[in-house]
Amino acid sequence: MPVQETATEVLLTHPANKDTSVSILKYGATVLSWKLNGEEQLWLSTAAKVDGSKPVRGGIPLVFPVFGKNEHDELLSKLPQHGLARNSTWEFLGQVKDSPPTVQFGLNEKLANPELHALWKERFNLILTVELGDDFLKTAIEVENPSTARELQFNWLFHTYLRIPDIDGTMVSNLVGTKMYDSLLKETMVDKHPVVTFHEEFDSVYQNVAPDRVVQVVNQGKPLHTVKRVNLPDTVVWNPWVEKAAGMADFEPKTGYKQMVCIEPGHVHELVHLAPGEKWAAAQILSKDALNYQAI
Ligand code: BG6
Image (cartoon, rainbow, N blue to C red; front, side, top):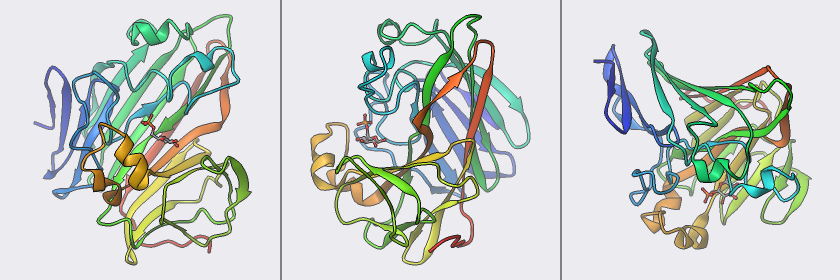
């Protein structure tokens, strides 16, 4: 059975390869696991809550309508960090394609977590499409503004936790020359490093990354993950390192920061402005491609 649904999760198995699968929690429409030929590609904390009591620590949480904490926007500033999509239970809309197996989930203001929606009373329709290829995982989002009068303003981001064997010896390529906001230093600069490497906490928003730049995670010279973006200009790179990991109750094992790096394609540097009745669409495609240094 390529698609199995339980009360809380949806599991897709590739019809040509039973060892390639994806599981999605209805809470947050959070991808929990993506296995390619039996090998897990995502990092999930062993203490992650999957009971709907808080957003999932790991996998692919969905960030909408605000990235981080917005201090300026009158409406968005009332919402908690990363918004309301990752802490709302989405509706499973069913399978929309057999090959590759593809399913959809929906969220709108009626389904959203009522306590959070009370803080940001906008109308919206979200459709998440998850497509399990034989060698890729595509997550696509469509945002519709159903209002006939009001513009919808939002951020979108796929908060992807990628699994790696060791943060030592891991680098992230193809971001050189890009303007980045270092969230720890609170400074904007152009990253001149040929590749991103990790020696301490890292938390930066790479802005307006050229659409054809394909971000790759490389360990000991071996390309592990390729992240392609559709209509997502920004990419956040995050590793919490020792102290931040220690401070997160749901981050386990505490040494788990060595086995993960977040590469988060999004539209976060600026808000998307969506006119009444309009739709906006974007996607992330994860795969394991050959090394492709586009810029050093
Ligand atoms: C990243 C942010 O996207 O998410 C970090 O850049 C943040 O600043 C991290 O710490 C995790 O956020 P949260 O809300 O899931 O703990």
